[in-house]
Amino acid sequence: MLPARQVLRQNAADATDRLVLAYDERFLRRKRLTCDSGASVMVDLPETVSLNDGDALITDDGRKLAIVAGDEPVVIVKGNLPRLAWHIGNRHTPCEVTPTHLVIRRDHVLETMLRGLGADLTLALSPFRPEGGAYGHGRTLGHSHD
Image 1 (cartoon, rainbow, N blue to C red):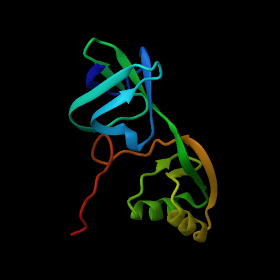
Image 2 (tube, rainbow, N blue to C red):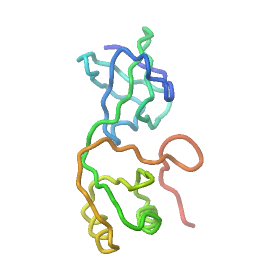
Image 3 (tube, rainbow, N blue to C red):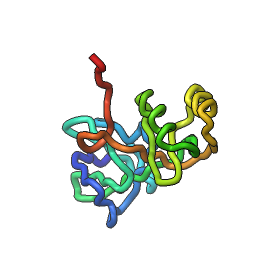
Image 4 (cartoon, rainbow, N blue to C red):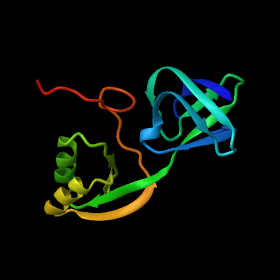
């Protein structure tokens, strides 16, 4: 099993193999993963990181492994995007933002809320690439309203 201890941000262009991971799987520190080729890799990073589509892991023998966002159940949200984005954000829900639509992971409670706000929802199976935190790379983890 190959150890991987280094992350390269947005630098997977010449990778020798791929790791296809869903959103939750791209948040890790130490974990055994299987590449597309079937090779096993042991990710062993100094701290927990949020990997993005297009990042790469470097193995101890110098191989570059591309991080690819895998398909997962999502909802494509259309309608009054500023209003809908506000309500999604108010619930601290990861959200992918595009000029024409929003994307969230499947959640029946949020889907009901969004329909009630007049949103047009389309269920899909596709990669989920939400916005990162406002103050740096990766996810915004819990915070306080105190």
